[in-house]
Length: 114
Length: 109
Image (cartoon, rainbow over all chains, first blue to last red; front, side, top):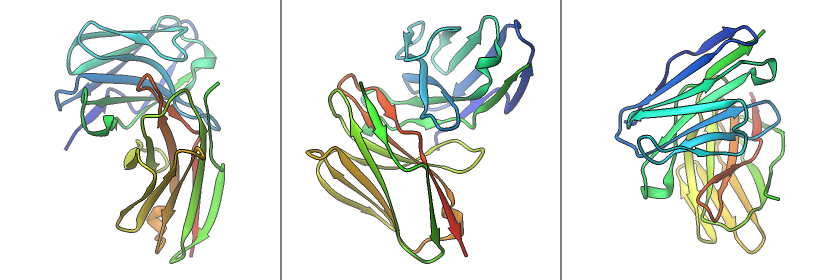
């Protein structure tokens, strides 16, 4: 089974702090994604990566950056956390050209910025 | 712009059948996905449709009409464990997933 893990299930940070969210997948997937999920809104793509050291902006990249130094690990960085970044953050991975481009999700990190 | 519409919430009775609709307007189409998400958990894949018609998988079926920009997820013999949110997502011409806000399904005994 594909397993996608995220470093924390719950995180509380103060405004202005630098925040790191880590995601690791164990199935050698090329593609990795970071989403945020807010009530009443669909999943919104922040950044994605198709390969090591490669990154592409999604729909809402402002205030975020990412790092992919190894194939299995994709990190989301909030340079200076703000209260409007309080959200559920979901990481996902998929095979390049794989069946249906089905995405496998991690359990999510619920981040609260106070 | 790109848009996915699905009802916010639906209620059904255990043992019954429920149909969750999804309409979409996207730039291009490379398939439609349904995911299930239990409260506090990650979304999990349910189905994928790229051709018109009905795909059946056990108690769950998914239908697609590309000409109408319409899909539905049909759940039969509802069980309490089916209480969850159901997310519709369309893959656009850039192979990016556009997500609906999800439909929260409440099952009553």
